[in-house]
Amino acid sequence: MSEATILVSGAGPVRVLTLNRPASLNAFTAQMHGVLLPALEEAAADPGVRAVILTGAGRGFCAGQDLSDPSMVGSGGPPDVGAVVDRYYRPLATRVRTMPVPVIAAVNGVAAGAGANLALCCDFVLAARGASFIQAFSKIGLVPDCGGTWLLPRLVGRARAIGLAMSGDKLPAEEAERIGLIWRAVDDASLMDEAMKLATRLAAMPSRALAETRRAIDTSMTMEFGEALRLEASTQGELGRAHDFAEGVSAFLTKRSPTFKDR
Ligand code: T3D
Image (cartoon, rainbow, N blue to C red; front, top):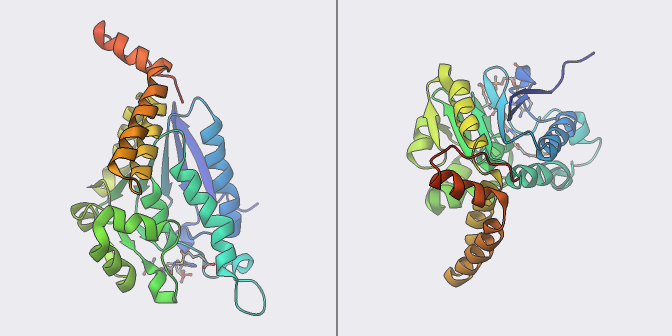
């Protein structure tokens, strides 16, 4: 039997999903998509899961689309790349971006093409200092996908978004941190410890409020200030009636640690 393309492991409330095609730098095949999305759905539906880590096996994080996967390339005539993006990358990016719990990319090595943008879809990107990010699309005549055109300018501004996307140059992890593309670059050897530490901390926080924070910040990008203020008020209205707010306030006032449970 062939080895699993996605490894699922967990430590308490933290679910770890490892892309596992190391010989191809964990490039995406249709088969791997067919396992990753359900694994994310499963984590989203499991009330015991309160943080997710995405990482890669071997020396790479993910080299994007597997350019040799026959099920993607098709047979005869030009491939329908749009259909591949629609079928696989759009649902994947949407799922990551709407998870009910925080998602951390632990980028262990090169992240190229859709692999880079899958990482950037996550709430936190921790990268090993030896890792790098490549918007490889321009080199094969495509535009950034898996959310890249939306994410890049919002993370690093238009000039750098255009520079990274058009040049397809390799951006080392420390430079990615310096320009605000990612959260932190860490020593290679401590990547998973740091990711687990962060995930454990986030798992103890009010998940629903964290997911609403992501939604409010993402949707605010296309809103007028007044509209964002109204969204803040309505979101606070809902969160204020939920368990976690009462628990957070009670814990503060009675000087104890809170136990959050909303998702
Ligand atoms: O249908 C669609 O295409 C739509 C979807 C598009 C989304 C996309 O992601 S498009 C972008 C696709 N990705 C790329 O173009 C990246 C291609 N890879 C590279 O440029 C380089 O491999 C890296 C810069 C990422 C790493 O370079 P390096 O020198 O560290 O490693 P390498 O020797 O190039 O790769 C190691 C092995 O992985 C090698 O196999 P081999 O020769 O040892 O048998 C290489 O062929 C394989 N590999 C790397 N990337 C891919 C790949 N095999 C298939 N597809 C890949 N994307």
